[in-house]
Length: 231
Length: 231
DNA sequence: CTTCTCGATTTTGTATACATATACAAAATT
DNA sequence: AATTTTGTATATGTATACAAAATCGAGAAG
Image (cartoon, rainbow over all chains, first blue to last red; front, side):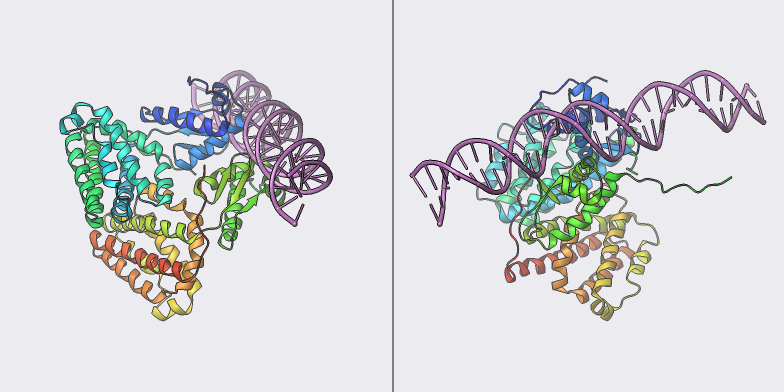
């Protein structure tokens, strides 16, 4: 396995954490079998000692990206669609909460700022430039979470980073850009009108529709199985 | 020939994690100012080296119990009521999801098992033995989360351990045992009837009422302020 | 009396060393 | 020949060592 070394900067453990998260997160999405991770190997490739690698790995373990078996080291598990669906269930609730809070307590210009995220797109554009639209999509949801004013919600959200990444793979297949476009618009509308119930309902439906389609594709394609649980 | 095995040695980092979580969790609830934590001091008190202490601290950081400032070590922050309210907002959503899922997919006997948790209590008992009732309460919610079938939900739930602990302090004041008693009963009822919408609604309301009362007490008592964010 | 500066001390961040458990394979036993 | 045993290699878990940054206090300056 080859991952390029990182540039030595302020705190190695944080650099290592970020580096591993990105590299391993990407790799997990394309994985079919668990991949063993050797501390020394990772340390050598990143050009650091085992200590910061281990500390970074603890965090990744906590986030669920890797699994530890005592004395046998860490394994990078393939991200399963079932697990991704679990995440979407949770995400439905969290985004519902965020939308509600933004509608209730958001700054005056919050609807405008949300709209600005999609300024470069019309309905056709959302379909024509799926990669860019996906990025805007991510930005939209991140902004919602941030503007909710619930700092703990933001932290919780961030800790699911690897699952968000895993999602990209599945979402690409679904290509529901057009529907998504209207749904976002409706959510922003409800927020502009300061209607928390409606904002929550729409935000939840938005995620639920995505989940339903992802779940449907579970039957169509036969995708990687269950994850191991940390013992 | 059979000689009994010597005590199987667990992993220090896990022992340290548990020990610190309990000790610090308790202390955080009574704290008014940040408490500096020295690695060597903790290591010495627990009789281990700094390494497992550091690894345990990474996990506690991830869970939000302690905050790190680069080169300045860890600090245990007082758990603020505002942060606890944020948690209750999130918890409302997570419990709502759990109740929905249990009503939808729970095992046949799940309502009975939930009821069994409160078997020792009637309405008067809930008021008369608040400590025991609080324990049953915790068990009830944990069982719901577990029975939801969403493993990721369980993990997420567990990672908020310190906030749950912090809650005890506030909840003691509220003493809403009697209302709580009926609310639990209604939730179980909705689950027994396999009514996911109603189960979710009731579970959410249950938490929201608690939150409302906690929020009200924020104005009454003047409680510790905001938490620092991890930089 | 307060504030600022500078150096000694403390403490963290990282690297390395050592102990012990697991993995793998060859040899021995049945 | 199949299975068990045992030896060796390898990787993890923990402890220790060392370097660099932050803290603390004494003394000088205002």
